[in-house]
Image (tube, rainbow, N blue to C red; front, side):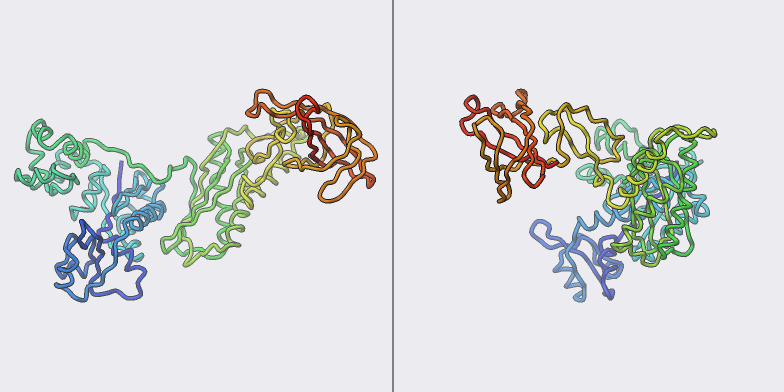
Length: 508
C-alpha cells in the first residue's frame, strides 16, 4: 500500500490571500478565545517577524503595527479542505480530507501514471503552489506515517519494502507531537522528559499504556506501520472508470463532447466483461485552476452501448452549458465512471429478427433516457396502478425510469379520460335526493344534463384513517353542448347524511 499525505501549513491565511488583490507584509487570522482576541494562524511574513498562533492581538500589533488581520472562519477552512480533496481526485479516486489542514490519498498502483512517486510529489506540490497554497507532500507505506512525514520531517518518500527496523529508526527521530495527542497525555510525556518517539519505542509498552493511555500506543503503532488503517475517501471509488488527460486544457464544448464519446467507448468494454450495464454515469471535469465540475446522467435500463451512453452525456452537457459551463482556462482531466450498474444479458448476435415490440421498447427507453438527461429522471413520470378503489388514489405518477410499466387491471366500469387530482364541488339539482342530477353549476356556468349513465356506487374503505367516510354514487353525464362529465354524490340520503354533496371528478 502507498499513501500520500499533503500538508498545507498555512491553509487559513492562504485561503484569504488568494482572494486579495495585493499581499500585505504580514497577515494573520484571529478569533476570540476565552474573552480575548488571539491569533489563530499566521502567514510566512508574520512568522518571520516573530508572530505565532496563540499570541494576543494587542501584543502582535505592538510588535508589528502594519500587521493585516482578518477574523478566522473554521467552516470556510473545512469547506476548502473538502474542495481540495475533490481536486486531488485527479490523481486517484481514493482521496479523503485530512482536517484541519491536509488531504490523504491512496496512490497504490497510480504513481506510474505520473512518472513515478517523486514526479507525483513534485506535480502535486507545484500545482498547489500555482493555486496559491504552500504545501508539503510525502509518500509512505501507511497513512499515519505519510501524515507525520509531511508535518514533522524533510523526508518525502519511504520505500514500500522498508523493514520494521528501518521504520522504527525513522519514526524515532519524530517529536512526540507527531502522536497528535490531546490533553494531559502529551503534557505528561513532556513532564516525564520524553521528547522524541524514540524515547517511547525504547521503553516497555505496559507501563506506557498504564501512564499515558492506550491511544498513545495505538498511534505509535500506526506511525511505525505496525497497523495500517485504510483511509475513508470523500467519494467511494467506482469499479468502472475511464479517463483522459490533456497537456493543454479543453475549452470548447465540441472537444468535451468528443472526449465524452471516447470515454464511453473505453468504459463499455469493461461493463461488457463484467456482464453489467450502466444505470448511472458521472463525468468529472478537472479544471486547470483547481475547480471541479460534475455532470451525471441516469438510464431507464442497463446500458453498455457507447453511442447511447454518449448521447445521454452530451445531452446533459448541453443542458449544463446553457446555464454556463465556465470552462475557465480549460479542463485537463476528464473522468467517466459508472457509479451504479445492474446485471445485463448478452447482446443478441444471431440473425433472427428481434421479438415483436422490441424496437418500440428500445425507442421508448432512449426517449426516457434523453428526457431524463435534459430534465432529470425524477421529472419524467408514468402512471402506475395502485391497490386502491377510490379513483383519486387508484393511480400514482412515478419516475418512468424506475422500472417497466405495470399493467392496469381491467375496469368493469368506464373511467373518464381526464381525472381531476381533487374533486371539485358543484351545485346540483335532482328530482329526488338519491336520484341523478338534472342541472348543475360548475365554475360559474349552469349546465343542463340531457343524458346520464349510472350510478356506480363506491363505498369508503373501512380500514382507512377516516372511518366517517361517505359512500359515493358516480354518474356519467352529458350536457346540451355534448360535454361529458363524471359526477358523484357523496353520502347516502337518510343513512349517512341529510344533505348529500355533489362533485365533478373528471371529464371524458
